[in-house]
Image 1 (cartoon, one colour):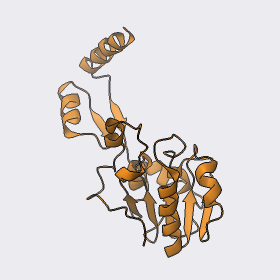
Image 2 (spheres, helix red, strand yellow; image 1 turned 180 degrees about the horizontal axis):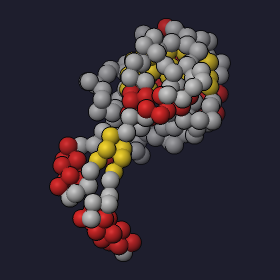
Image 3 (cartoon, helix red, strand yellow; image 1 turned 180 degrees about the vertical axis):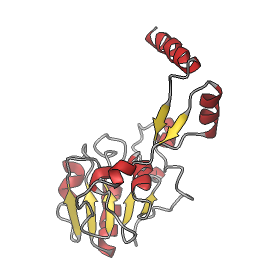
Length: 196
């Protein structure tokens, strides 16, 4: 009932040209077309105000790995994920930006990983990493932060990797696995094979 009331109200506002959507997300063309046809303009937000904030917010190392909550949420097994992060740290120094919901299953073992510095910031990664430059690369599993990071730091090299099938726990439904995929900005799927 609440949804019906909200729909009626929003339609009325759209007819009166009093409704506008502002988003940083990449919406499908069909959604944009339907909104425009309904009288709802969609404005793209590029976070110019955030990019303009003063202060040093560049990571200490060139490579940044965004932590994930997938282990803490019992969606993937910890072992292969930890091996992947350790493999990256073997190649170059890494700043590991922990996810706010990560727990001891990942942070405990990674705290002993050579070449890896864990940061557990209190602000979103979009704020803490806003000063990345072309020398920085970000490696991550699927996360909504990628969409905004690409807008805020277009010069940084951001790679979002699909979760390998073997990492998923058996109880995770296929629909959830299909939802957690790299952002549309990724040019092609990337092989996430473990380092030899």
